[in-house]
Image (cartoon, rainbow, N blue to C red; front, side, top):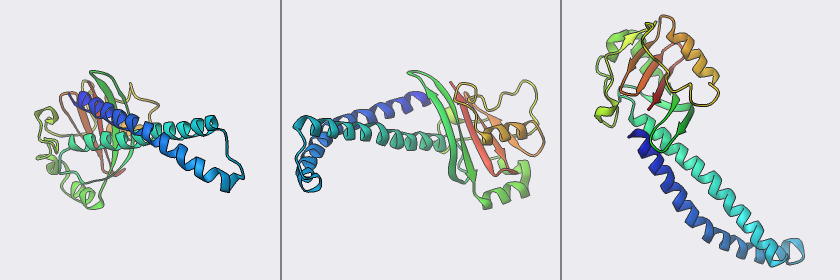
Length: 206
């Protein structure tokens, strides 16, 4: 369901910008036609103006949806994370989205105040952090535990089908194998908090 929503939003983004590209290209051609003579000293052929305007419009079509849909994707990740965590910024995210399912992860930096409370209270701090910000049952989590994990507990499950793991993810993975971090699992996702690194990692596969 999570992936279907993300894919739907992505397709809407592409449709909107696809329609906008046509009008943008026409507008750019008109502007280039007006500016070409004073700037270049001559008026380029109409074909050249059309090709240039369409190239510029296609560049917009490619770049803006990528940035905009990336922002939407990160916001969906935020909604899956319990509100007890103060997410300052996303440091890295990577995902593969299919028509029905996908996988990926996002690494967030936690606020210093949030980290101070976690370090002071330890596992007690996590007792109420078992439901995502959106309140949906799909983002219900098991009671939190302290690392290291046992052999049957699967963490950072989305890293294997995304791209090359980032250095931050590798450091978090090493931390999850030792004491000092905390984790929980959900239906098709897991959360890992590493206070020493100031990070929260959301990972999903399904």
